[in-house]
Image 1 (cartoon, one colour):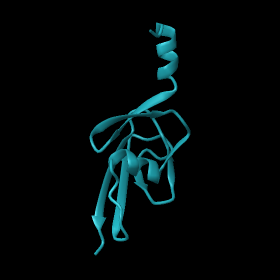
Image 2 (cartoon, rainbow, N blue to C red):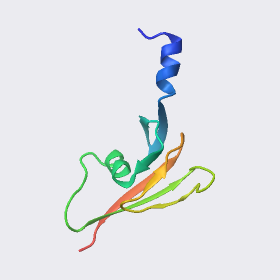
Image 3 (tube, rainbow, N blue to C red):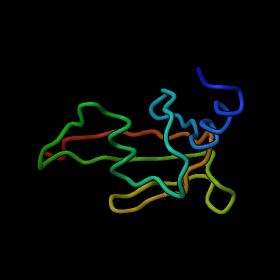
Length: 91
């Protein structure tokens, strides 16, 4: 069983974000990529030539607290950050 100090150390390595209204615990790191956020939102991930994803976020860092995350981009993750991920079939 982990001691209180070990549990605090483990928590300091992770953050909690909200993806499509569900709490997700992720490793604390500098940035989350577009693909990582989509994978957190959908399991299994809808795939196909016609599938297009749209990600919006808010409660981010002070320099860009809200916005759109586009394919190929990443955003600095913050504890409590909220992501809304939707997909459409462009056909």
